[in-house]
Amino acid sequence: MKIVVTGGAGFIGANFILYWMEKHPEDTIVNFDALTYAGNLESIRAVEKKSTYSFVQGNICDVDAVSSVLKGVDTVVHFAAESHVDRSIHDPANFIKSNVLGTQVLLDQSVRLGVKRFHHISTDEVFGSLSLAENTRFSEDTRYDPHSPYSASKAGSDHLVRAYFHTFGLPVTITNCSNNYGPYQFPEKVIPLAITNALEDKKIPVYGDGLYVRDWLHVEDHCRAIESVLEKGTIGETYCVGGLTKDISNIEVVKKILHILGKNESLISFVADRPGHDRRYAVDWTKIQKNLGWSPRFDFDTWLADTVKWYKDNEAWWKHVKSGEYKEYYDRQYNPKT
Ligand code: NAD
Ligand code: DAU
Image (cartoon, rainbow, N blue to C red; front, side, top):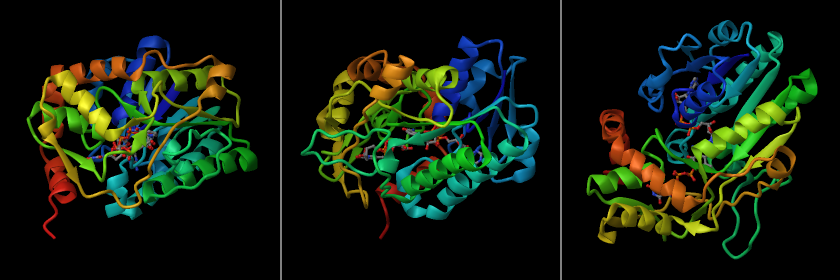
């Protein structure tokens, strides 16, 4: 099988390529990625010399580049997107371009070239925010109610994917998953940011009261979920994917990281809140469990300890990432002049 992975130099895409090539060595993978600030070929060094892997630098908004890379392809696994909520508050236009228009270009060319499966990676953020007071969860039936330019752009892309299924018969599947964490995550996201700042004895910024809740999904469990959907999922269907977490607040997550590293809680710094900050996410993954037999392998504490160890052992990877553009972004986000 020939698979095009879009965004394979990013966090989840790179983990997916490493996972898939190990489990399915007979398949051919083409990694199509624009190499934005979030794209990092160092994350996929382990496979770059394999004859079944190739990299094509290109933008999903570029019709010619997309049409050329999709020729003769069986399956598209679509990760490429602008993914960080805070950046979407500074620059919404970029999110609409990549996440909405880019997805539409990919869908058009997939129809034209007869792609046999288009799998779209989406987010639980399209469903909006849950209350801390209730024990509710997002499921495949939850109404869309995105609150940030990022989640609105992902919602737009989900609607387009379904529209291409109904209108053009493109064989699609969608997964809406919760917050991922694990190796090779860009340290703008809270878990790698907290781990790497703690390792450098730098302050860890916690937004608002720190009582926001996320549903934590280890990236390997996510890759296994995508594999289940590609192998056993029903065309046209959506599957929600989440972790094995009871509600856990951001401040508790940061304290756990400090505890694992033996660092002092005085590193925690409460900072201004994110505008439109969603209070709570929690995902009901009963459908993918019942229909496809998927469930997460380990609980949060086990995977978190494993993740902290990875960042301790791979300092060269994140130190390189934290130089350059990241520094400018960090100052703009956490030390604004005005
Ligand atoms: P990431 O920001 O780490 O990586 C995104 C990758 O896409 C980068 O390699 C970047 O170069 C590439 N890219 C961006 N715009 C592109 C364009 N126009 N053309 C080609 N390549 C482009 O993102 P991630 O965290 O790995 O997320 C991957 C996907 O999973 C995204 O669609 C995101 O919305 C979704 N998702 C992420 C999470 C999470 O917790 N990280 C959770 C749910 C869903
Ligand atoms: O829910 C899935 C989504 O998870 C994905 O669709 C997004 O691509 C991904 O970025 C992630 O979005 P979040 O906004 O939830 O992730 P982030 O790591 O930015 O923030 C997690 C929580 O931590 C959130 O409540 C905001 C808070 N936070 C974040 C940062 C960066 C802080 O308290 N301090 C910080 O410095």
